Length: 416
Image 1 (tube, helix red, strand yellow):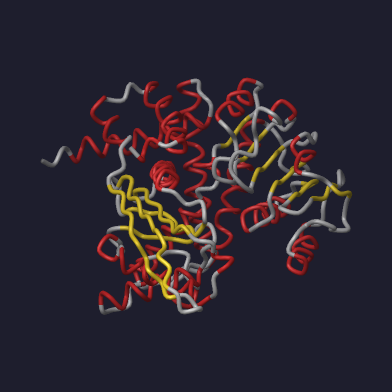
Image 2 (image 1 turned 45 degrees about the horizontal axis):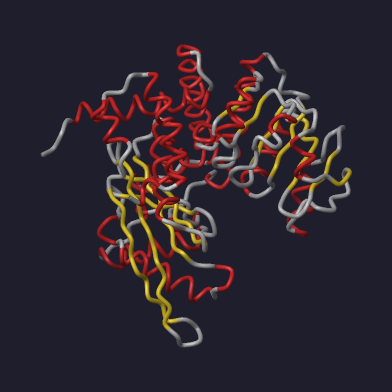
């Protein structure tokens, strides 16, 4: 079965640990470890050279017990059904941890967008939406941007769906341009959420966030906003790396100047405010907080023994391998798991969906205040659960998520 691939198996490994602790009923366990719906579609597109190429697309709705499915669409050559299914499952748990009324979904198209023109990408997007049109909608499944997709792609998704249903339906996607129903504060939401949970973890551990030293891997949207937000509350960002290089200054980096530098150079490499630094060196720095905000599987058993941070905040999806996570936990390092740490994005996507359905839009301050409240509540619930069961925060987050979905699954009963 496709759902038993390596990535889905990794998700199951985390799920099973939590499910055993709470003695989850076998029937509910069975339901929650199977995707509700897996769709594979063929998307023929006439390319700029006149030739027709057929792309494979996927949309997986893993669980919709709590509400409409929610999850991004990614464009990448390595997209697979196994990956999309696992990501849809993780979205289910992330939405449940965030305590928002969404289930989990994910979509993807096997393509290399870097080798495609804007016209080809638009044609591919519209054909993909047309193929899954009956399965998405404001009350069914609400896509969002993901790897190699952005607000422009979401605008095409919204327009294609609207053309099919005969009216403008802004609530069918989130992550749209502000001008067509997007939410203020959405772009910064994931990084702002990272700041909030990192601050709360420091408070729990008795670490003063003002002056706390932080190293960040990755300076894309999430990493850069996290750095900016944390520096604004007094933390000292001493090291940053990205795809090309890095920079280290024990006295602290000027993040405002770094943001300007990256806008011009598209990398932190060469930033004049410190000494050159590699990714390998970043992980072994003597800092209070380490924030992996790049790709998956960055903290492994090769570099985990060298990590000296007190807190690891997983801003990226799956940055720590299971063995490395167990090693860090056993050493007393406080790991804030990805399904909690980076849930600010989907939480504010929920706010965008609510605003679209209302037809009334909030000021950015209102969005940020609501995000602060939701992130603090989510962190508090996960922390209390981890202390109650004497487990790490990742297992605590899964317990919170599984209990919320399982409770409603039993309440709704079995339809036959």
